[in-house]
Length: 302
Length: 302
Image (cartoon, rainbow over all chains, first blue to last red; front, top):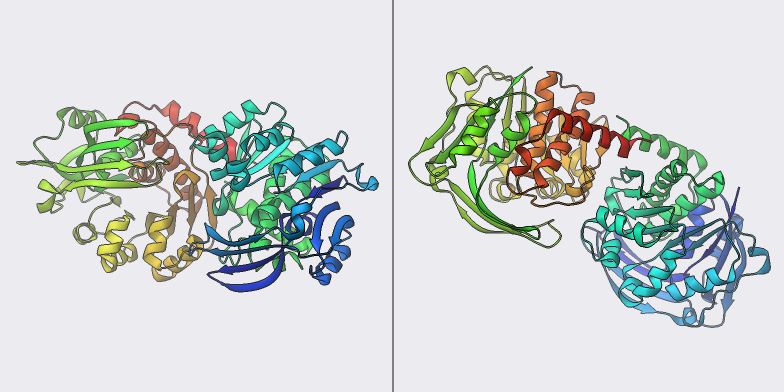
């Protein structure tokens, strides 16, 4: 089994969806990612929070054996985000973004993290993602994520992260924004041409599933058939968690394993969105994962 | 092989998409459907057009051995529609709709059509769809289509058509509109509950593929991976054509065959949208279909 180094955001969120409203709940890309990925592999966590970050979440992470040596708790308030989802949950308005302690965040990698074989650069400023890549020596696999906010504001740095990654994950509106090509398949072709180091590109299609290609083969997988989505926050991070966790567990990054990893990503994403905040990631078992995998096989089998 | 009776619209369209603009081109749900379905099975065509409808399209239909005994050409102008697609081609504005000879259309079924085993009720006023159902005796399989326009204006009649159908085809925004349920899977559950006669429900997901369920099993299939969409007009009708045509060819309506039919529908839809109007449906061969089927198998195979 390989170890995963993850660097990303840690937050406290207020979330309103058509299913209800929660306040002061844990969030952030690194939190969602780690809780999903730790079901599969060992995690070396890098992030920053203020003293107001809930102690029980830190205890939960410890109980999952997530290494928190790189989790800085500093004086001040944790990054805050507040968002409201529209009726169909496909889009949302950000009502508040307060960087707080995240403003002065510089990822510091403890010495015992340097041997992590897999690096996951969760959705944070691409400048911070690049800093991490400069600090770590020759990881086996670099997987990166981003979002429209960074593509709009820091396009060239997002491209630099992509060029230095082995696997890049983004959604169809993000890849269209980044490549200026509306057809997501053509956008993926373009992306792979511009990033010759990439072994695979994963395009998330929201409730419709995901598309993955290495430029030679391509594969579609539907989303897990979920009758009730409660809170889409962290869906992408939880997807990345199951995806990266499975690859770490296998220690094999062939396209066939990457295809399976997409399915595990869809499964952990479905656990995540079935409840508010990280609630859906708290209690799932290996059996839940295996049952969901069988279900996924059923809905795609000819 | 079973015979398919199709009733639908016949039109002349002006179409603008990001890929270009065409004027006075053939269109209408029954035209797209028949050209797609005739690659698989025998078609008994019912529709109405004015004297301005292009003779070469009628010749093309004859060359496909489509029975045109029920195709009325009457004095006056053919139904006209003009539309402009938005940049992402996911939505469009209707700029003009002139019913013309379609206004007085009453489907008349020639005597030699009455033994059609399969009835396809293409996208027309649900009142007309119901008239056809009242005229034909005990078909083996009734497959119906609709659109948001009829759901908004004639909801209860659309429901009546659905309740009298064996297979219903619509897209995810239409099923949400009809059931008032935004999650398309839950909407499908509801739809099947309300229509106990239904053997299968097909929910088209546009460029993301399609979902089909009989209430016990469910299946997802991606769209054919098309790098360039030229004109989405008629995509749904062409999908229904390949879908229904395949079932007619097989004469077997098991859920396993219905799943394959969804794939053939995706294939004929991809031929249709790869060029303007019906151009993409003019020249495809059996080999093209089989190559596309192999491609579809490749992109869904684990």
